[in-house]
Image (cartoon, rainbow, N blue to C red; front, side, top):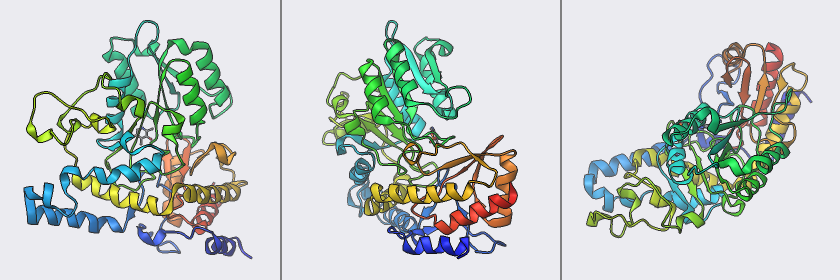
Length: 416
Ligand SMILES: *Cc1c(COP(=O)(O)O)cnc(C)c1O
């Protein structure tokens, strides 16, 4: 059997048949297959076919009902964000009152830090990973400045050991044990955007909290990628965007988690707006806020319905399939792609252990941008370059197939 036939057979026999047909896959003109093999879903997920209809309904309610759609629409806008609560809670392993869909990711990180980064005395430092996404690095540095602190001393960047690509859990835990009393906040990516490393979130959360620090997770690359148990892990807060693995569309509304122990604590300081007051009294327009005992207390503004509608449509797919089934398929696809890439000359810097990675393989190559352009032009394989030398491939289990992995590996084998 040829490698291509074998890939097709894997698609036909997989316990979770692809849901590719529910997504709009970009065309790849000139290639052999007509459609792209899309591996950039960790950057921008594909559009579910159900999104357009959902948006159409909201546009239609706006046209027919205008202001009345707040209460009379088919999904009344005043509590539209409620529709996302349960699916989002299931997605991240939270209780429903611990999650809210609002804002964008970096905004939510700031709102969370406004509440939970409370430097005091010698406990001022913020731990991030050296390979943190720039927005996170900028956000924590600006929080330090905001508190009158020097970011160079306040922000600690965790580096892998010399010659290694990943943080070792034992090193993170050791650091927390030794220096934990100087750490106010641990804020790492659950899955690193660059290397694809899946952090040991339960162990790090436990160690951070035992050291007396607050532990928050950036789940940009983890939500919709790996199963999460935020409540049980006892994380203090988390935030994630919904346009990567969650297919919510460019700049879609983000998610936010605040642990139950904080939502019940009215003394936690927060930045407030009218959507953070109890909905039963919101329209009394009282000057005093009455925050509910839920993550909704962190909401500021009335939600952007047109930006929430795609997220709702997308979460319905996750709810239907379930993260455990998606994770299992992701491990099969990622493992297959890794085995096919072995020997192409493209060095994989993502952990080889499936338990220490999500749906992503990062390759170190000589000219990342050039390779990504050639992959698209010659084979309709869409990947993502982080200049100068990293190419990221995400075989997203909802819509990528073993055959797509075959296409990518064959093309990379030819080009590298
Ligand atoms: C994608 C990503 C972001 C992007 O932030 P936005 O506020 O959504 O623009 C931030 N942090 C990480 C770790 C990311 O992967």
